[in-house]
Image (cartoon, rainbow, N blue to C red; front, side, top):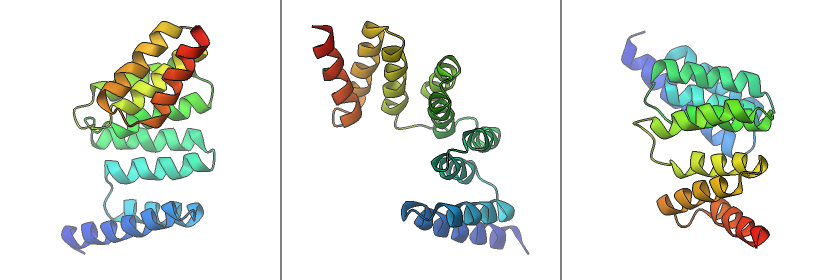
Length: 161
């Protein structure tokens, strides 16, 4: 099979996996993402497979998939943020900060307000409220409609008064 055919098959499996994923059929989505990776591995597919695994609380496997994504495309920001998010779920906050900072440095990442929000949550949990507010504020500067950051910001301001 020539490379273009493999790439097309991989894309078809990715699309199928994504449809299954968003419809809540996570086990089937995982299988389809893996099939896509057999034909043509991409950073995006590894990151999405990690996301699906995380929904089953398989965080260590999800982190490994994100690391594969980073190997394929170190500039792709999503897997850095995702690793940070999974580490938060594992209560590994200091490790999460490292990966979330890496997401902010990634050249190919348009939703930097997400790791900014997660950094805010970490610092809020650690009791560093002014640092948390700064991260929430930075997130809102990038996307003023991002409700989780807006809610967290105003809740923390109210708590501090």
